[in-house]
Amino acid sequence: MLRQLLTSKLHRAVVSEASVEYEGSIEIPADLVEEARLVSGEKVLVASITTGARLETYVQVGPRGTGKIIVNGGAAHLIGRGELVTIMAFSLCEKPVEARKLVLDEDNNILRASG
Image (cartoon, rainbow, N blue to C red):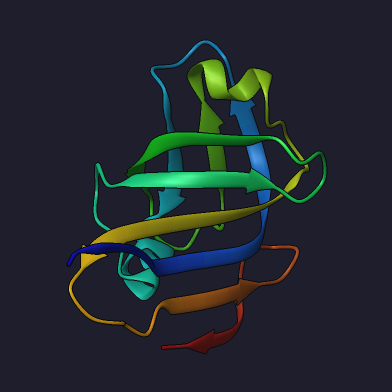
């Protein structure tokens, strides 16, 4: 049986920018994408710790080392600049997996990593 399980998580990321006038996605710096084991175009669930809003979008890889998490398109109506979010990816798995979890600081630097 396949189960949908958490495989990657960026916890307490701070949204640096939110732009309605852009094709939809969430831009995440390349270094964080790699550390979280995400891939460009991967579907993610974004949950605002600030407001409780939740949405699904896809990963767009941004420039390495900027620390900028950018919410684009219609999603920017739900989650805005300065909000704390958790970004989660799920995969279909036959057996339990240990998710890669990153806890970020206010500048989106990695404080802790597990998995």
